[in-house]
Image (cartoon, rainbow, N blue to C red):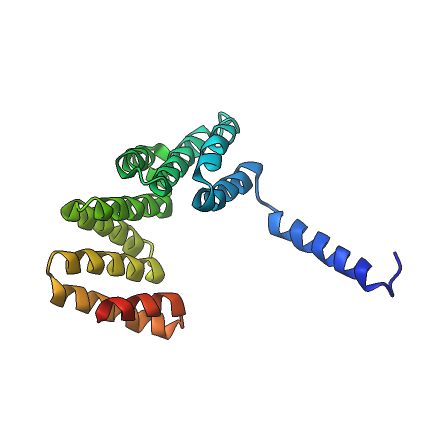
Length: 194
């Protein structure tokens, strides 16, 4: 390798970078993240990829792969505006053995279910799902997820006329996000406090 050629150094940098990004990640973890990413822009393509992802299941990781497949199907159906189908997949994911041992995963499923219920104007169910997500975030001492759940509950509360409670939750979240300088969530809080 010619040390003076910047192109060689750039190539070496990218090889090292991409090797380090994927270091320690299993094939199923990489594919899971890729399908999540694709589901936003091309849910129909992602829907086809879930079958490939499910085939990676072995006897050791079967419960995890199946639960994550249900999560992915829930996400894909959300992006296809199929909220009922989406929530059915999230319910299956939450009922899985994997969700019982991975609280963060269960919390994400509950949060997404809450969003689906909100879209369907099922506000009581939306609040219940977001409260389940909040309880899990609190049990994990995950301040960011706690405040994101509070924002989601606040948004639903504002739709049903609980403006004071909504504003209190948004202000609580705003104080936290200002402390950690999270500009996206700060703007979400300000947008909804008004």
